[in-house]
Image (tube, rainbow, N blue to C red; front, side, top):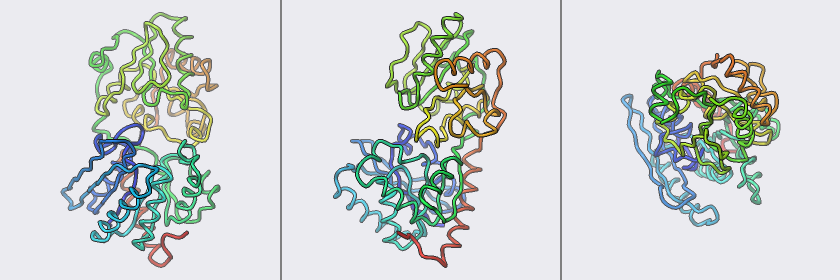
Length: 378
């Protein structure tokens, strides 16, 4: 297959090309590793750091990302980029376009697919309507129009698939592909070594989380839970990694490590006694599949989470302890349980290679069906 991916360059607050991170890198890379020709265009909305990458694989596949800074409110930036990418895609003989990330990217992917006369696929790795940018006039309509135009649609979680199939009235084939993990990057190590490497106390009971440390993810619940536990016992510490948009508690047993590179995240998760996943019961939290979930499961650290979205599904108990409420008291209760009788995850996360094989089959089957049907509808 010859495929063209359209996305933004910064997702989960990381440059996915520079960090070779998240499904935005791994899905195209896994397809190229299987011998397919994959092109991509990534839009950087902020100044600087718009750099591409090319990688060739032994089986003959190739992945070639281009990147450019495109200002969201400047139409001429986007029109010029679309013309360049349309020419690039035609020279390569692209057979399908895959778009993800937000309303702008989905609209661009749809226009590119229509111009090329090839099928469009949409990857919903979040509920894009929950993003702040989706409040702009026409944004939600653009998301829905692209979804309805798609020959096939990918979803990061089953709750999101069910929600958007009903909301948009989708009839084309769909597949749920959760976020995965590179098992080699999360190879075995010891908690003692991880704590030594990160400068964390060796004999403490450490609770922590990483990623978006802000109110939109409900980080206040974990902060409050830690303060409750810290009053009860003097060996509990809180470790954090990420950009703290809500300041951590001013407590001597809080360790904020800042933003860690992806290569150090296995150390961070392994260093913890209990890893917390914070979510709010809103249009984002009900449908997401946090990237930290497979990472924590890969190192086997016991975890806690609120009963929201994928963590409200019947088998959520195989992942960890469900907090009875998504507030400080609920999180504190779940953490106490994990500290008293640790329960590591009992569900193995999928690797990016396994997910890539499923994606390859879905694309091939859907393209075979689309050869006898109209493409890029809507």
